[in-house]
Image 1 (cartoon, rainbow over the protein chains, first blue to last red):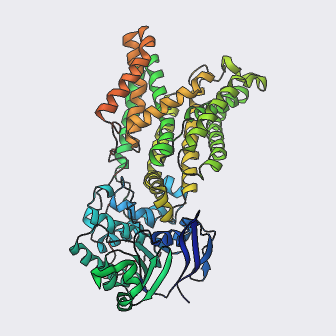
Image 2 (image 1 turned 135 degrees about the vertical axis):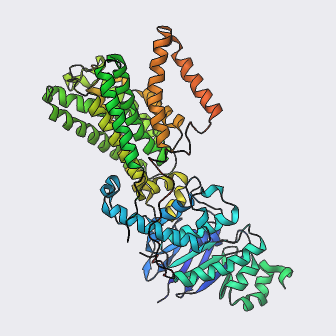
Length: 255
Length: 339
């Protein structure tokens, strides 16, 4: 069974066809890149998959279940986590608590347990705190755990976005331009990072990216969008040689 | 696994509370704290209890409410009526009326919050403002249905049996409740919704549920504070719960620093005492200059500490930023993230 099956997904904003007839099937453990020029509709696809905006038509099937009618938090709890292109961390909250927030949406204790700090509370808190620290360690942010998220440098904020998404315990991770604003050495580190968390947490990853080097190194398969439509798909090598893609996006710079 | 001690600062908090309590008892019996100052102290604790409620709603969860005094008033009238009609000074009925005041305020908050808190943005402010005005009108005319409320002339005859010990206990319970929730997944969900509702939603936090919980709890605290108020001050009057009084709570929470519970407590107590000290120093002219003093205080704080006196700060014994280390999982063990 495919992890994700997107069928004929379409979103119109008035007369604007933001996404038309988008189809995508992802098998377990795949790492797929979604590329395309600015305004091609990539982030809209993410917003549609996570049900943050309702589609005009089409459906999203995740692990056999239709996501239509689910709210974003329910989509997340079903196993899809995402990061945001324009970083949306909880800025005035510590790095640790950013991750603990996503970890503890169903903490295993109720309101009474929380109000009285009962035994179940202490046990659950200790456990989710330890697990959150593990994630921070993997992302190299453990020594920043008590700093406020908003005070971190840009590259670390991007990594914290990933850490926070991992805290929700996802099966499918949607990364929206994780390398945006990073310098070349940070991008190199990111490739390793994505591969290692993918292996470690058993993830299937869909990734939007502008940095061609990153996409070509990282992704097994690439989907190219332009003006809301899928114009090409295939391995990095196939994509690099596809004239339609060159025309729409890569241009002569890569050719 | 070794249990992580997440409540390390609590003994210190409780010890200080005890010291304060005993000191008050001693000073009170020596008449150093006289009747007048005891009245002010009690008022400051009652007001702060309600302000902690608004701190949960606005400070923690970021939901702007302009009707806090109305919920305070609902609690006062509910509890006052129960005690006046059936209690006649019975302490059990009094305690029951505290619960009833909190419950009614919470229930009404739930009914108001249910449709409005589904929406993002500041609709709650508008709705609670309207609610506050409606409640005031209802209180003014309440004697048409229930004579005992006294309508626009206010309600008298509520047994004055709320003394310092019970007021202080309720205050302390409110502080501990807010603290404990703040340090739980509920508290983290509140701040997440305050910081970025869209992101919180995407991270598995149910925004409607979380906001409703904050609003209901916060209003219930206002209700219980109002219930105490009715049993401490001889007249329960509609003008004590009008729109402008809601601003008092708002000023306390904002001046203290949004999101800082320590700030709310310091400013809540400080605000009531400041007004009384000024009243004592300035005498009659205080009433004339009251508005000027309010404005000046606000302007000064906004210039010196634009985000509030203790914004971003907490008394660490009460709400620690650091979380103690537990036993880390064995090396090489993959954390079970999906748990």
